[in-house]
Amino acid sequence: MGTDKDSQPNAYNNNENRSQHIIRSCTIEDLEGVIDVNERELPEDYPYFFYKSILDNFPEAFLVAINARGKIAGYVMWRVERIPAKNSLRLISKGHLVSIAVSTDSRRKGIASDLLATSMPAIEKSNITEFVLEVRVSNYGAVDLYKNFGFVIESIKKKYYRDGENAYYMIKTVETE
Ligand code: ACO
Ligand code: ZN
Image 1 (cartoon, helix red, strand yellow):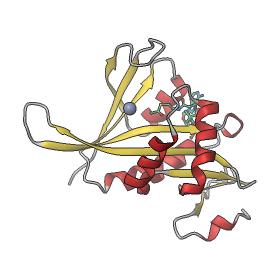
Image 2: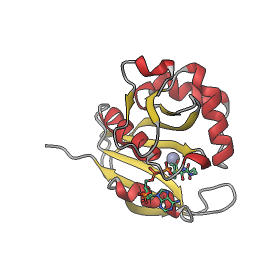
Image 3: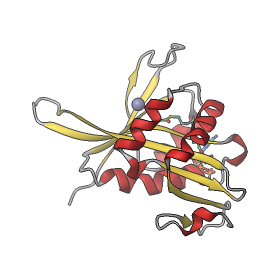
Image 4: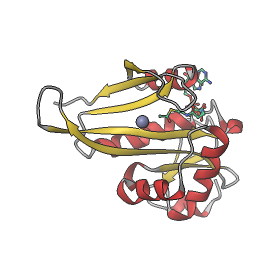
């Protein structure tokens, strides 16, 4: 793990030894690498200013995974949405998983799991009542990953994607004491 980012306070080495990567906060210099991974791995692409605004507004849960060669192997980004609660005008906050992706050559090594395990407690600090996300119904791997983290399928959003595919709307309620 010889990257110069290792010394950053919020970087940590995963101790499972499943892959040589570190998880750390995304910086403005990382955005190009994040966009590269997104464009290679997902059909849902966003303009630069979209990534920049997520980084400006929700930096605590915008993380990157850096591989042993110092390259960005994956990212995760969340945003907090304030919306009216069901049957009430009260506003509640939800943590919305905007996007997560891992490079094809770095998959099944626990990188997405590490990204979620680190970003979920970070976005939870915004007093959210639930974590939410949409995922293509055909994306079995991602659906399994989310189920591992306690997400359940709440509903189906018909023709959610531009190509007409349906999305599962998955949620995980935040435990409150
Ligand atoms: N098939 C079956 N199960 C899978 C798969 C798969 N392809 N990928 C992950 N899982 C499940 C397994 O249970 C796996 O545990 P295991 O390897 O011990 O069996 C577990 O999730 C953990 O997998 P990770 O290694 O942590 O996941 P990885 O780093 O490979 O990344 C991801 C998973 C992000 C879905 C990756 O395949 C990817 O980038 N896909 C393309 C982009 C994408 O689909 N992103 C999600 C879109 S939805 C959204 O962003 C809100
Ligand atoms: Zn969404």
